[in-house]
Image 1 (cartoon, rainbow, N blue to C red):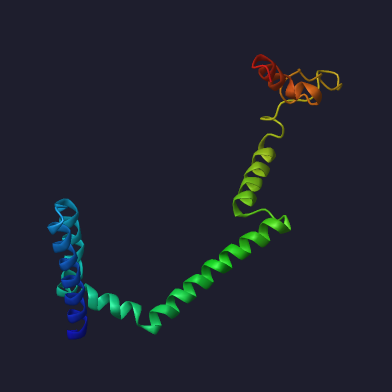
Image 2 (cartoon, helix red, strand yellow; image 1 turned 90 degrees about the vertical axis):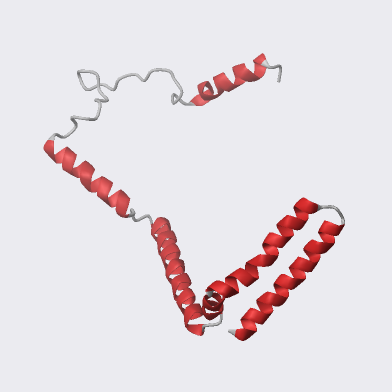
Length: 149
Protein backbone atom coordinates (compact mmCIF):
# COMPACT_ATOMS: atom_id res chain seq x y z
CA UNK A 1 0.00 0.00 0.00
CA UNK A 2 2.83 2.37 0.80
CA UNK A 3 4.45 1.75 -2.59
CA UNK A 4 1.26 2.48 -4.52
CA UNK A 5 0.71 5.65 -2.47
CA UNK A 6 4.26 6.79 -3.17
CA UNK A 7 3.87 6.14 -6.91
CA UNK A 8 0.56 7.98 -6.97
CA UNK A 9 2.07 10.90 -5.07
CA UNK A 10 5.02 11.08 -7.46
CA UNK A 11 2.71 11.03 -10.49
CA UNK A 12 0.58 13.78 -8.97
CA UNK A 13 3.63 15.87 -8.10
CA UNK A 14 4.88 15.60 -11.69
CA UNK A 15 1.45 16.61 -12.99
CA UNK A 16 1.29 19.57 -10.61
CA UNK A 17 4.73 20.69 -11.78
CA UNK A 18 3.55 20.60 -15.40
CA UNK A 19 0.43 22.52 -14.37
CA UNK A 20 2.60 25.17 -12.68
CA UNK A 21 4.69 25.59 -15.84
CA UNK A 22 1.53 25.87 -17.91
CA UNK A 23 0.11 28.51 -15.55
CA UNK A 24 3.42 30.43 -15.70
CA UNK A 25 2.90 30.61 -19.50
CA UNK A 26 -0.48 32.31 -18.88
CA UNK A 27 -2.53 29.31 -20.00
CA UNK A 28 -4.67 29.13 -16.90
CA UNK A 29 -7.52 27.06 -18.30
CA UNK A 30 -5.12 24.35 -19.48
CA UNK A 31 -3.28 24.53 -16.15
CA UNK A 32 -6.52 23.97 -14.23
CA UNK A 33 -7.34 20.96 -16.43
CA UNK A 34 -3.85 19.48 -15.91
CA UNK A 35 -4.20 20.03 -12.15
CA UNK A 36 -7.48 18.11 -12.19
CA UNK A 37 -5.82 15.20 -13.99
CA UNK A 38 -2.82 15.34 -11.63
CA UNK A 39 -4.99 14.97 -8.54
CA UNK A 40 -6.68 11.77 -9.79
CA UNK A 41 -3.89 9.29 -8.80
CA UNK A 42 -3.71 10.61 -5.22
CA UNK A 43 -7.48 10.48 -4.93
CA UNK A 44 -7.55 6.89 -6.18
CA UNK A 45 -4.81 5.90 -3.73
CA UNK A 46 -6.57 7.56 -0.80
CA UNK A 47 -9.94 5.90 -1.50
CA UNK A 48 -8.46 2.41 -1.90
CA UNK A 49 -9.59 2.03 -5.48
CA UNK A 50 -5.96 1.86 -6.57
CA UNK A 51 -5.39 -1.15 -4.31
CA UNK A 52 -8.48 -2.83 -5.79
CA UNK A 53 -7.32 -2.08 -9.35
CA UNK A 54 -3.82 -3.43 -8.76
CA UNK A 55 -5.32 -6.55 -7.17
CA UNK A 56 -7.52 -6.95 -10.22
CA UNK A 57 -4.77 -6.39 -12.79
CA UNK A 58 -2.03 -8.45 -11.14
CA UNK A 59 -4.19 -11.39 -10.06
CA UNK A 60 -3.72 -14.41 -12.36
CA UNK A 61 -7.13 -15.79 -11.40
CA UNK A 62 -8.81 -12.71 -12.81
CA UNK A 63 -6.98 -13.11 -16.12
CA UNK A 64 -7.97 -16.79 -16.26
CA UNK A 65 -11.57 -15.69 -15.76
CA UNK A 66 -11.27 -13.22 -18.64
CA UNK A 67 -9.79 -16.01 -20.76
CA UNK A 68 -12.71 -18.32 -19.98
CA UNK A 69 -15.18 -15.55 -20.86
CA UNK A 70 -13.35 -14.90 -24.14
CA UNK A 71 -13.42 -18.63 -24.97
CA UNK A 72 -17.15 -18.71 -24.27
CA UNK A 73 -17.78 -15.73 -26.56
CA UNK A 74 -15.65 -17.34 -29.29
CA UNK A 75 -17.62 -20.58 -29.05
CA UNK A 76 -20.91 -18.67 -29.35
CA UNK A 77 -19.69 -16.89 -32.48
CA UNK A 78 -18.32 -20.05 -34.10
CA UNK A 79 -21.48 -22.05 -33.47
CA UNK A 80 -23.63 -19.25 -34.91
CA UNK A 81 -21.43 -19.07 -38.02
CA UNK A 82 -21.56 -22.85 -38.51
CA UNK A 83 -25.32 -22.84 -38.00
CA UNK A 84 -25.78 -20.16 -40.65
CA UNK A 85 -23.53 -21.93 -43.17
CA UNK A 86 -25.14 -25.33 -42.68
CA UNK A 87 -28.54 -24.01 -43.70
CA UNK A 88 -30.22 -25.08 -40.50
CA UNK A 89 -32.68 -22.50 -39.29
CA UNK A 90 -31.78 -20.69 -36.13
CA UNK A 91 -33.98 -20.85 -33.05
CA UNK A 92 -35.94 -17.83 -34.24
CA UNK A 93 -36.41 -19.40 -37.67
CA UNK A 94 -37.58 -22.69 -36.16
CA UNK A 95 -40.07 -20.91 -33.91
CA UNK A 96 -41.43 -18.91 -36.85
CA UNK A 97 -41.75 -22.08 -38.94
CA UNK A 98 -43.56 -23.85 -36.11
CA UNK A 99 -45.91 -20.89 -35.67
CA UNK A 100 -46.62 -20.82 -39.42
CA UNK A 101 -47.29 -24.56 -39.42
CA UNK A 102 -49.69 -24.10 -36.53
CA UNK A 103 -51.59 -21.38 -38.41
CA UNK A 104 -51.86 -23.49 -41.54
CA UNK A 105 -53.27 -26.40 -39.56
CA UNK A 106 -56.12 -24.22 -38.29
CA UNK A 107 -57.12 -22.60 -41.58
CA UNK A 108 -54.93 -23.59 -44.50
CA UNK A 109 -54.51 -20.80 -47.01
CA UNK A 110 -56.76 -18.37 -45.13
CA UNK A 111 -54.17 -15.65 -44.78
CA UNK A 112 -52.36 -16.17 -48.09
CA UNK A 113 -53.83 -14.66 -51.29
CA UNK A 114 -54.93 -16.94 -54.06
CA UNK A 115 -52.71 -17.10 -57.14
CA UNK A 116 -55.50 -18.26 -59.42
CA UNK A 117 -58.40 -16.29 -60.81
CA UNK A 118 -61.50 -18.41 -60.47
CA UNK A 119 -61.11 -21.40 -62.85
CA UNK A 120 -57.54 -22.43 -61.94
CA UNK A 121 -55.69 -20.32 -64.49
CA UNK A 122 -52.96 -18.16 -63.03
CA UNK A 123 -53.75 -14.49 -62.60
CA UNK A 124 -51.76 -12.08 -64.74
CA UNK A 125 -49.34 -10.07 -62.63
CA UNK A 126 -49.58 -6.32 -62.62
CA UNK A 127 -46.67 -4.36 -64.05
CA UNK A 128 -44.73 -2.92 -61.15
CA UNK A 129 -41.45 -2.94 -59.33
CA UNK A 130 -41.13 -6.72 -59.18
CA UNK A 131 -42.30 -7.54 -62.71
CA UNK A 132 -38.71 -8.25 -63.86
CA UNK A 133 -36.79 -7.36 -67.02
CA UNK A 134 -36.00 -3.84 -68.13
CA UNK A 135 -38.96 -2.33 -66.26
CA UNK A 136 -37.00 -2.63 -63.02
CA UNK A 137 -34.62 0.11 -64.08
CA UNK A 138 -37.06 2.40 -65.91
CA UNK A 139 -37.47 4.67 -62.88
CA UNK A 140 -33.73 4.95 -62.45
CA UNK A 141 -33.23 5.67 -66.14
CA UNK A 142 -35.87 8.41 -65.99
CA UNK A 143 -34.12 10.07 -63.05
CA UNK A 144 -30.74 9.89 -64.78
CA UNK A 145 -32.18 11.37 -68.00
CA UNK A 146 -33.81 14.14 -65.99
CA UNK A 147 -30.44 15.14 -64.56
CA UNK A 148 -28.68 14.79 -67.91
CA UNK A 149 -26.55 11.81 -67.01
